[in-house]
Length: 496
Image 1 (cartoon, rainbow, N blue to C red):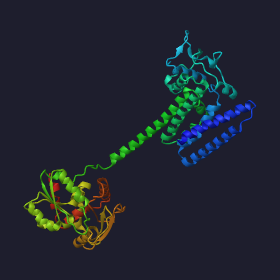
Image 2 (tube, rainbow, N blue to C red):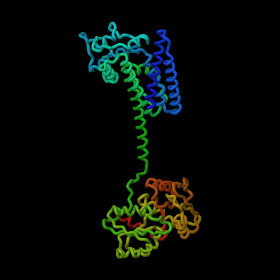
Image 3 (cartoon, rainbow, N blue to C red):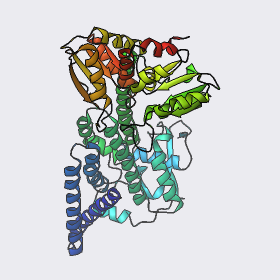
Image 4 (cartoon, rainbow, N blue to C red):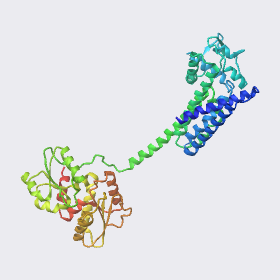
């Protein structure tokens, strides 16, 4: 909206300046109103121009509009009609196209011709307007469109598509019987608007060299043609935009090529995470042990438990959830023989002691390890616990940043189990995104189930450890190995 008002103010300013010149030429006193309007419009334009440049700074396409609009309107108003280079011939062709004559008309001897109103022709030449006073007179004359005369036209070879903008204006002017000189001025403005639009987007889309494009568009000859009824305006504007857009496409192709190479080099990560659904059959009875101790959130289950339950339901299994306290009662429902038991890793030892050896057992943590990471890598890392010795450094990493409570698995339970098995160890903790850049000092990294990380992030952390030959495992597998049941809880994933 602001740009439209700015455009209109530019036209009004130039009209008033031209009016003052005509009055001065006729030795008439320039009216104070005219001087006042010139001053007001000039101040508005200068303020808007300064504001646009200050606000947009390196947004060259917006500065282009702010600067080019008054310059272009000046050209339109002060370059007298048909004094622009070849404008006479292009005006003939546009007028001919406006009458539906897309194919060039010729005389009997094959010379291209155009029929135009005789009122604007003198001696088979366009009536050149050589002063602003004469321009004023021409703008008040009636144009007799029906009284036509044939004139020679050297621009008849140009494609009619180049004149669709100006030809449309001529057709409207002829149908409304408007003054031809005014119609010619409106046609110039329409050509200029076309140039403004494509110039704006040429600067905007070109990925580099915006200042160079901005500077080139202020080429005086380019503006001269853009503010006339010339097909060259359409040709120049379209070519400039085409080049800018072509450069953009080439740059995009280069970026896509680089992106594709990165994708090719990236580790192949399966997007669809496998939990436990592919290891159960429709109708299988799954018993889930979910202790509700001080660490359990109030009013809900933790995310891994919810995800596993949903996966069981999606694959036709029948999940039953119990706490550790009523595990025996839960087993009694299935006569002690559920098809699978999934437990919280922290109570692995107790559940294993109660459970029949023939009943498959695993944990939520190991299921998450399978879904988010690489079971084989984590399995080898868990076995590294057996070779830990006093003084070794171990990193315990968590993906989430929950508030630590008494009996926290990462800061109390797991360190205690490790110290009991391997002696005095140096144990560091980290949480959230704070995974150390330098892990070379650690003999083992023990990671949580990664329920708050996606597979790519987890694989990335595994990759860091692998690159530096640091073994890594997760909470569930570490606890299972310490309790001597890792191979048992991994059996379900080794079948098939």
